[in-house]
Length: 238
Image (cartoon, rainbow, N blue to C red; front, side):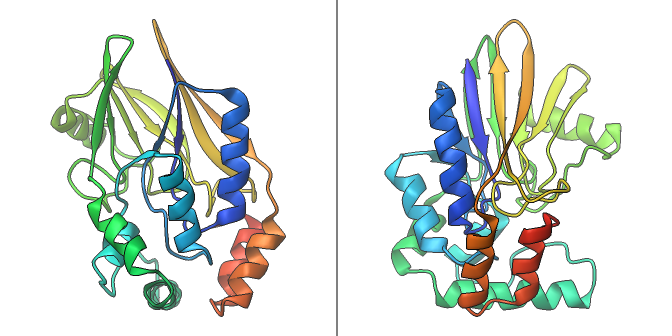
């Protein structure tokens, strides 16, 4: 089975459109979204609409939970006061510009999904099985990942939240972070998603997709969001 996994779209419609077109060309067996559809970008309603139109199985991210429930916090881990102010401006803008229909959909999302493929159980979530906003990184201590894997019980754990893709094997369990479609932090502006092959072996391919970054950045600026958010899209630093 071949699974395409998108995540951390963050209201970036041009990036999502480019990624969906790439996925359609590759024709995987299924498409899953690991959350954070909204926040930071200029097109929250449009991004949600695209995924709903395609009936994409989706789990809630921390930002989806915050906006869906009209909270003024997103559960983000801000590095300093400046980052917190940028995040809070994004939250306020997103709350003001997200329809009630979109918020109701975000509230309806489950926090996890499971499926079976190739004789293995796959567990999808956003941050970790414990919290929407827990960070599982490529650099995370093996003991932490082992603990999370035991809690999950799945053979393959697929998640997001850090915006940095990786595939790591710990005590026989596969940990796969799908990266970020709309707010990448892997060092260049390209959108990225995971194409996971599950058969006799498990392989994760991280597919970079060029898109019209300037269109997305201009949309952020024209919406009245902080210019720094647009510039970060241009630089590919999240």
